[in-house]
Each structure stands twice: as C-alpha cells, then as structure tokens.
Image (tube, rainbow, N blue to C red; front, side, top):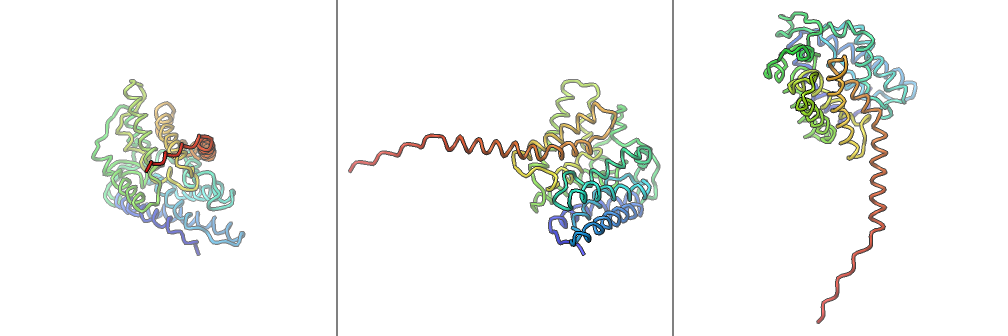
Length: 314
C-alpha cells in the first residue's frame, strides 16, 4: 500500500520509545491521538496519490507520528484530525507530494491548529502520572510558562520527562537517545542537528550574559519542544538545504530564531515559527552555498600553476 522508504522506517523506530513513554504518562489517550493523526493523514495522501497513479509514501506515517507527539494530551481529537489533514494537504500534496514540499508538513499542521485553536491547544496539558491514573489539568502551565514567571524546574524532571508537555516532547533523555540512533544510522544530518542545538544554546547563553531581562534560563532548552524539533524537524531531508555549508547556516537560523521568539514575543514556545522560517530560507541558502562554490572553483582555475621542480643533476 505504501512506498517502501527505509529511512522513514528508521525515523518511526526512533519515535517508538517516545510514544510508549507517552502511554506510560497519559494512558490510552496517546493511542487515540496517534491513531487519528495517522489515519487522517494517510487517508488524505491516499486520496491524492491515487489520482496521480502513485502509492502514498511511508513519509506520511512519519508526519502523522510527529504531529501526534507534538499535541497536548487532552487536545480534542477533531483538532488532531484537522491538523493532520492540513499537514498533508496544504503542506505536501498541493506541492506535488513527497519530495516537492517546501515546508515541513508536521510543523505546518501543528502551527495551523496552534494558531487556529489557541484555547484548546494551551489548556490541554496535564501533570503526568503512571498510565494516566494520577493526572491533573495544569492549563498552560508548561515548564516554559513557569520559567517565564520566574519559577524554576528540576533538571531531573526535565531530563526524564516527568513534567507537563506535549505527548512526545517531555523526556530529554529519550529524545537524545533517538538523536544518537538517527546519527549512527546516518538517517539524519549531524550538521543540521548540531548547528540547531549549538546555536540555540550559544545565543541563549549570550542573552543571559548580557543581562537581558526576558532571557530564559539555559534549562529552558530541555523544556518545550526545542530538543524534539532539533532532532526530528530541523533534520527533515526534504525541507532542509542540501549543501553542507547551507545546512550549518540553516540550523543556526532555526536555533537563534527559537531563542529570539521565546525571549521577545508573546509566545512561550517558538520552535514551529523558527522551523517554517528556516524552510522558507532553505532554497536561498542552497543557492548562496552553490554560488560560493562556483566562485571558489573560478578562483582556483585562475590561480597560476606551481612551477615544476628542477630535475636533479646526475
């Protein structure tokens, strides 16, 4: 039924522990959200690809999984369905299907429902409990919101994921292990991942050193979706640049934009906006990198050839 894509299967494998952990935290609600996201997304792609005489790609399963894992635990299922349909239709199929989309579909779908249904998206968080048995609604009081209010959060909770957040974005440890797996299997580009993480951390540290009043503590990099986006979204091979030099700039752009938006805007989270900005600039960055390569090649071709070494006398 689906086009076989080993790369996408490895991404799905890396997401599986995050999904299982979300079931531990929030119970069967996680299963329902994932099922709706996968079914709606795959259905929309099947409808369009059938008209083109093609099979849907396994990439749509990655889109559905990423979208589901970026949702709050108690988000209404119809909102998940709207997000999945928008992600596949508007951010992928209207461009011609897999490999032609400009924007990361999962990010586009997430941002669409985040802006369209603000109240539902910001009030769907829970304090985690084993298998969803001891959870309390916390409204919009995610760790980033608490940090903006001057309240700290234990590093242990942030690393292990025992705090309110989206389904798959809680555990920094599991996300880090997934990133290592993606790099070890050469599924994701280390340039994209590393440049996003280092630029975000460096820019946050710079703002703190300059005494910017609104700057969040460095612990905020373990909260929200920064790590999740750096590992899974910024490394999307379709919407990211292809040239190595452009990939470093692309990751730096995303990382710095995340910190800028978090610090100076009304949104406590800025990762989705930052990735879409990076997607918009990806082609331009590739063109700039290619032009630099051509200039370098032209300079090398004009450089005088080295004089031949003198022959040794007998």
